[in-house]
Length: 165
Image (tube, rainbow, N blue to C red; front, side, top):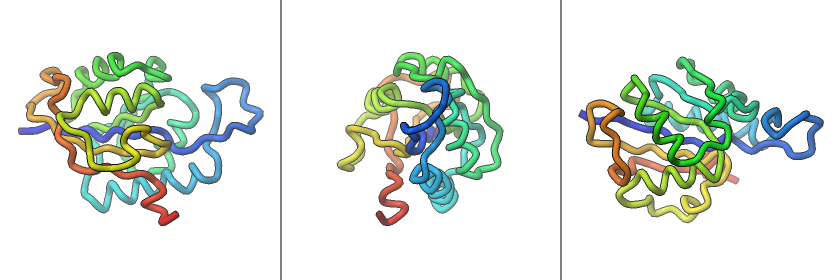
């Protein structure tokens, strides 16, 4: 048996906003186009998560909504700018075998790098831009058995490729 992780950095957010805090920043127009493309891509490759575990920030909530995956989500405050170690702890508590985590850099990028045996052959994996999405499998029956460096890349993409820009 295997467990599958879909690791997504939130879509592009707005900086020129009247949001009262960084946590409240919304997506910009590019992000609003990118998030549905990520959802479409996950449907196309038949990788719909069974559950989404997301930061509670506005931009991750909007990314989740616009992906249109129609799966249950939980929004966790401690995933807002979480480190790789926090993301690891949260994933080890996951109950579903195919989980998507929505979060922020630098934690998402660090987490992706530490989880995989070998990185994908992709020029954008290193910096993990907004909307970047990794699909990886792990040779475990339960997330509680997760260990660093055990993931195998299934696919990796960025919105620019999906939108043809």
